[in-house]
Length: 344
Image (tube, rainbow, N blue to C red; front, top):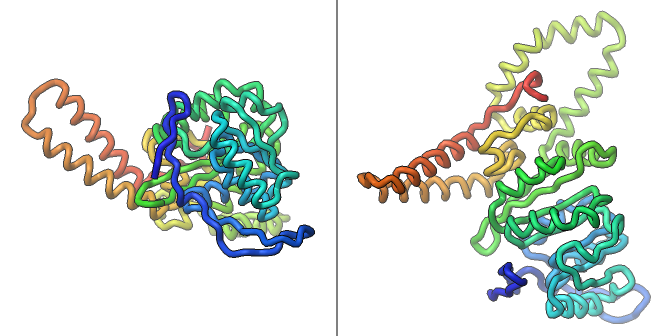
């Protein structure tokens, strides 16, 4: 493992991010070509780009992600961008190696500055610190104004990134978290609020990631069958009343019940613990998140034990911070799902 400094930003570069996996014949060229296999981290990022056709990978480094997605036929085109010439040259080598020059272009760019408006329908910013991620989005407002979907994998200050997205009018539609080489990597997909395509993507992602396909189908079937007053009455008799449903939903702690409510309450205001650990990761009971929470709890309690007995004001402030984090960890393990009437 080594590190590269991009201006003031230090990015982690890992040889395990991609590796050749088998060989195949490249169509029309008659030459042997390697197929690429991504690390768990980049593979999870790739999954969140589903539905994109034209991708911009900002901070592409070796260009593994666009090569992988184009090679699998999931993209029509891609732009691999980096602030430093060295990484861009390595990306160009990989693009040539996989004979993808016609579909993947490279561009020396500080953030999104050299991206043309409307050139990409999905932008990926992965492997950078949270402050740099926010800086790229802020300084690239003009270039990114027509881009609808963003896949972000910040290495730090994830809570700040989530809050920034909401403040800028984005919706977070999906999240994932993986453990790769002993490290935890949360990531998210966001779309612009109010756009027709963004609204569709939000609902599609919510149902797919939260496994609510059956629930949505059942709801649609019920609506289609309720074509007269008698059917409505039978349905009313089964459901009792909306208040009873909400009380029941709050008590249902199984994953399926939580996921059904997740679609219904996507617009509900996020709580502090959701900004900290991720609403969809919590509702999914993502196993990697649960492992992370267990580790975080142990760390917080160990530090609290060391601070015990100290009366200094600084120690008191630190204790308060740790106790708040422990409360958020507990809330994340037993989330309270907002009722429908709590949605703004």
